[in-house]
Image (tube, rainbow, N blue to C red; front, side, top):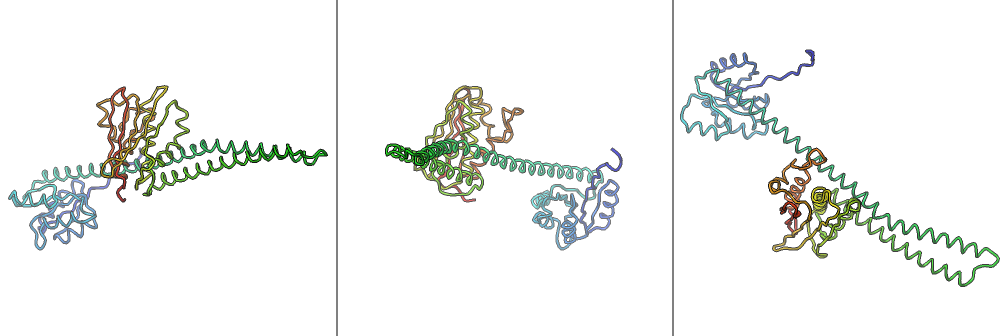
Length: 403
């Protein structure tokens, strides 16, 4: 690395607020020698103004000052949006423990007693600057994780839309194929009757009656299959709107579950597993069908990936019932491998997975937990034993909280 490539680390900025010129001069001289950028203020009002514009990394604040004392100045700093996170170290000649308690209550992080030793001042400054750097790094990490989670949720939605497209293509294949067959057959019969009509012999009554009978059959096949295709498109359109908008609406739970199971058909048909739905047809909810569908889809995929891994058969049951006080109990249950007892308390933790390095991100069940608790206003519980299968139970309000 040449000199031009050496990263420039900014000097920490320290604001010193003290009405004693001698103390200001002494601290300015000693701290600048140790690589700090110093900003000075002789009154609390001046200090508050300089804190707002200089954005210091730390403030040394005298307690006893005219007009506004250090405690009140600290309270105002902590009330400011730009200054609330700046660590404040009080400088005081007071030794009363009650005064120190007052300072900590006001938001101070430490005390330096006058007359001070510069070594002590440097030690306390460096400690709190290191703590602030660590806190900023932690906040940056949290922000990065939040952004990563949002990206994963977005990718989940895109993956859901991909499954939706595959599902509608798969489901439309049969009615469109039947319609194409019926229309092709009808076209051939029409060509044949046309040839007979233009030939010298013409068309007999029996041939014409046979043509009419085939025409009615073709129209019936076309009508039934095109209506079936229209119903499929309508259903998938609603599922797509729910998955992408996360809007709150009234819906029949059985219809939403069935719609989401249809989107899984292309995946399920490549496996030996069977999904059964046991949901009352009249169970109405006022909630968020998109996030709810995402939860059910994730739990079913989790059962296929983990519960029935390596197995040649398996049943996944999706059941619901109305419980007391307007709550709905919705469960997704498999009879697969189960979860180790020591892992059960951790399965909703972010990044916990037994598939790390082989495709598992450890965020699937964490996303499920967050959707259930933060969006749907419910809770999710799990019961499992090794070799005995797993049951996820969602307890949801019939009317979800408004967001």
